Amino acid sequence: MALGNKVAAEFVGTFWLVFGGCGSAVLAAAFPELGIGFVGVSLAFGLSLLTMVYAIGHISGCHINPAVSVGLLVGRRFPASELVPYIIAQVLGAIAAAGVLYVIASGKAGFEVGGFASNGYGEHSPGGYSMTAALLAEIVLTFIFLFIILGATDKRAPTGIAPIAIGLGLIVIHLVGIPVDNLSVNPARSTGTAVVAGGWALEQLWLFWVAPIVGGALAGVVYPMVAGDG
Image 1 (spheres, one colour):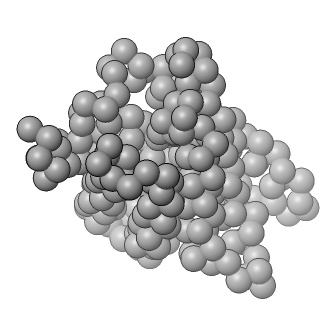
Image 2 (image 1 turned 90 degrees about the vertical axis):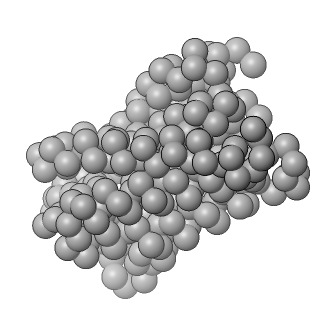
C-alpha cells in the first residue's frame, strides 16, 4: 500500500476517533438526562476505534495514535521511515475533528468552550488527581493498551478478532482513566481538544505526549520478551 493511502487512512481514522469519543463527551455527556456519563464516553471511544480498525486496518494498520505508532516501531512491527508522516496525519486528523466538533457545539445558544473534553491534571482533573497520578496512569494504561494491540495482532493470535480485543481494551482503559485526567493514551487526541480549549489545556499538553509515548515504547520492548520473540 502506498504511503499516501496510509496517511490518508490515518487522518480519517483519527478524525473519527476524536469526533466519536470527544463528541460524546462534549455533546452528550454534558446533558445528565441522557445518562451516558463516563461509561457512555468510554464506550464511544472503544467503539469508534473498533469500527475504524475494521475500516482501515488493512490500509494503514489503524494506529490513529502516535503512541501506537511508536510502540509498534519499538516492537519492530512498523518502519521508522513512516513514523513522522503517520504522526503528522494523526495530529491533523485530531485537530480537524476537534474543529468540526467545535463548530457543531457552538451552534447551541449559551455554549462555552470550557475544557472541551481536554486532558488535565490537578484542578483540571475530573477527580482532582495530581500531575504524578496522571503521569503514572497514562504510562501504565498506554503500556497495557499497546500490550493488547501487540498481542491481538500477533501472527500467532486467533485471526479476525483483534479489533474486538483492541476496542474492548480501550473501553476498560477509559473506565479507569477518565476520572484521573479525562484519559488520553493518545497524544493526537489530546492535541486536538487542547488546540480548541487553549490556555491550561495547551500548558498541560506535554504530559499527554510524554507519558503515552513512554508507555507505548515500554510495551514495544516488553511484549516481544514475554512472547518469546527473541
